[in-house]
Image (cartoon, rainbow, N blue to C red; front, side, top):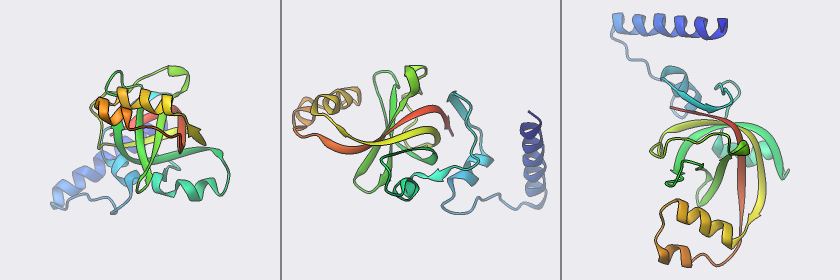
Length: 168
């Protein structure tokens, strides 16, 4: 609690100083953590801070050849379950998606947060996703019957089980 109060006090002093000098506060380009530190956030599930969060694009480096690891990642949300907000996706590399589900289905996220920045904390696993499971996710995402029918092969994908999610 003390850390939160000190951080909030420091942020308000910085904002007041920036307003007084008419200098805009700009986080370092490309640092989602800097952006998260300067704007309001909503947390779902277990509390999540930005401390130690690694950009989702560095996932492969973080895993270092392992199939799973406990990690904290930050990056833009690509898509969200349109049915209930029961999962979201992030893009660790071009053409590759990582599905983020929520531990024990204990919480959901808003369905309108695509494009926002999130910090997710939990366990990531590289695994094969069946055709049936992919089709289920496609239905949840509101895909057309043609798009769903076009899913015919299992895919290798990173799946993330989040203890908590922090959304800007």
